[in-house]
Image: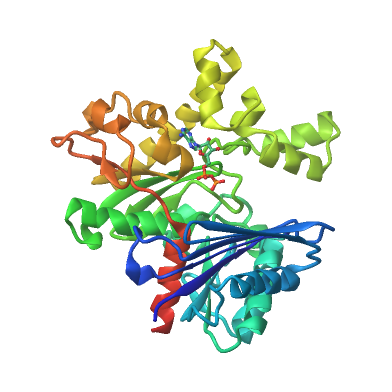
Length: 397
Ligand code: ADP
């Protein structure tokens, strides 16, 4: 029995899956659930099981009611937890600070430490913790494991994690680079060595997680040595709606000259910037359609995106010294062959030879560089739920 319930609890939503990590990625989850509009008068639950969809609209004042109703809906339709035995519950938690460098079995002490980390992720950690509390209450006999978005990057050397700002202030307020999307970067970096036919300890790789949020990482011998996201997920690559790296002086300028409040600047940089801020849409399918129609703003947005991406790829090639593999993942990375081709165009001098035909092929994990290319380039679908389930199971069996 190795089913894991994976819970991703947001402020107004609960996403969950029940899956067996031992069954392999091809098998897929037994149950996929989404509880939305928690806290509003009309909440909504959607479940998927064996190709069937089950829905419920009801008042869902909080996460407890949301999870209770979802589990009841599963039960009345014959696929409840009385039929599916659960070995562990895996919880996604955004910020583990410097306290959690890997998956953690949840007990009262661990939960207390997670509460202490709330100031580092005030918008995310409280909802993650609420999900853990609710699930522990409802499934007290099952072990619960927290998996942190930041965990994989705790291995970064101090020079990569440290910002050159006043040490006393940085220490007092825990200001440093933490990195995010760690579950995806770790999952991908564990899949690639098998594709190369080499042990993970011998592989140097760059992982490009390009979704709506986007981040790059440099991984040496299975350990992260650098990443593009920072103290918060705002830093690094240009994203769907986030600016990525900018001069911090922009914040002072907007405050002084535009009279914007901290919250307004936060909203601007996190939700109204990036590709969307430059051209009005953040879905790359729309972006390409507008580029083809001659939309100059869309063209510039795309170029800015590619420019920043190449900037990080170059930096990580130098940091790693020898690169065995570069891997694209997440919505854009898995589906957008223009981005992949342009991100690695004309880098033959650096040992990167993309095969244009292979790059166009769709599907699962695949090689898109030529057979002779010294640096192998892959597309590998990410699966954060499977990764969380694997981590959770590894701690309980
Ligand atoms: P999130 O960060 O929300 O998890 P995803 O990894 O699901 O995001 O990526 C979503 C993004 O993937 C979309 O905004 C879109 O830009 C991009 N995307 C999805 N499908 C395609 C496609 N066929 N071609 C190009 N881009 C795609």
